[in-house]
Picture (tube, rainbow, N blue to C red):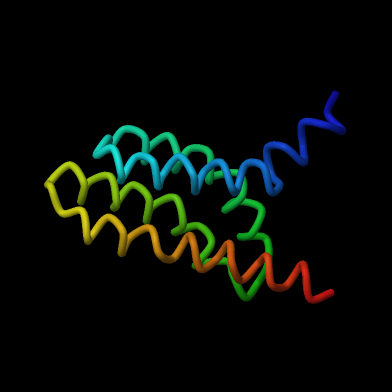
Length: 101
């Protein structure tokens, strides 16, 4: 069971689902959905924080989603998109590293 659960929680399904939930939260103007996205992103961020070069930046990824939820709650949709950009860039960068191997 844990052989299947670990890749789902820490792998690409969780990463992409977190980003999808966050984007839907911004589009529907539901800040609570961004908080759910941050909770889904936390294991991925914790996994990335094990690397020396990404330690401080990786831990901030769920906090950016919380910031996007606060921005959306205050009706600043453009700021919510700006807070979500670091997560999207981290996912794109990781996808590039994985596919370039």
